[in-house]
Image 1: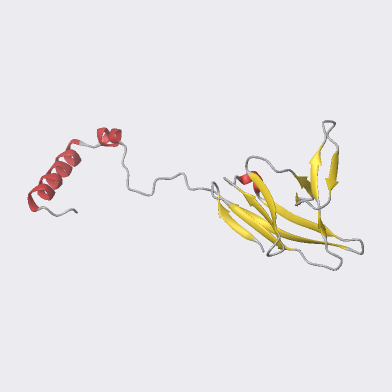
Image 2: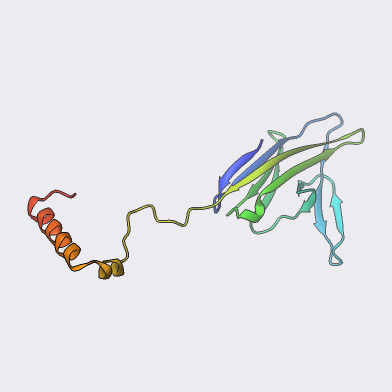
Length: 145
């Protein structure tokens, strides 16, 4: 299932794993010589068709009861956007499921009204008086305008 998350939030993908004979879920690991290998009976995923390694932000597990492979990404960043694929196989066949992660940029803009203090130094003398009068009216009436 494709998913969209806000930058900094977690994302999770699941993949139902069934078959006869029982499928093996592949996991990839990297050797010291930067070669990729896989082991059976583990959980594995690809990102943009490249092996995805578990790490501090990426975790995978297999839930035996529900026969579900799970990939969780913590603290999603824009580089995580892409295609995630789970590959399973048994002695007769293999299958894969792919989903897309879209990362929505976190808004860095304060949504509250804000005026720079220095903005008032550019007011003309007439506008300064008008602004001061409106402020006095607001204080005495008790109503924000």
